[in-house]
Amino acid sequence: MQVDDDLNVGELQERRQFRRVKQTLSGRVYFPATAEEAVCTIEGISAGGALVCCALSRPAAGQVILYAGNLGRIEGQVESAADNAFTMSFSCSRKRRDRLADQLTVELNRQLLNGHDHCVNRAPQGSDSDG
Image (cartoon, rainbow, N blue to C red; front, top):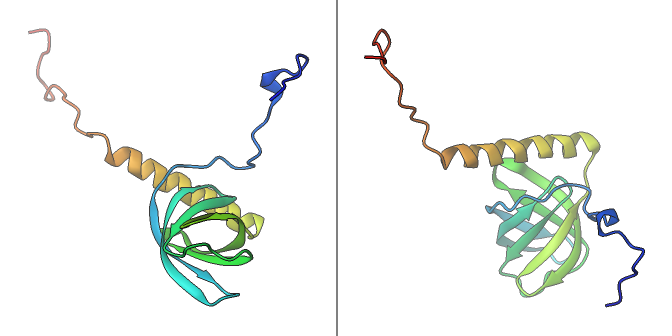
């Protein structure tokens, strides 16, 4: 690949509008065009789309409905597909997208907090630490 010398790498921008979180969630996926339904695993998700792995050999292009645990029902379009996986973009209102971003933030923080020990060693009240 030829790179133009005048191109500043810092000027390159991420194509995604929303930051994708590598978070594994279980759910179900439904394709209305073919009436196929399957159990799925969401490997990465953002407020704008998701990477979904499922048992279908190659999901059909078109509309898809994702049922994802605490996140609820999300409609969207298949963007690209491979064997046992596809990416989708969400088709939802700005309000729903904002709520989804908030839900993802809460879920991510919950996972981060569960991974840390919350015990803090403190001197008992009234004891003199200088001793």
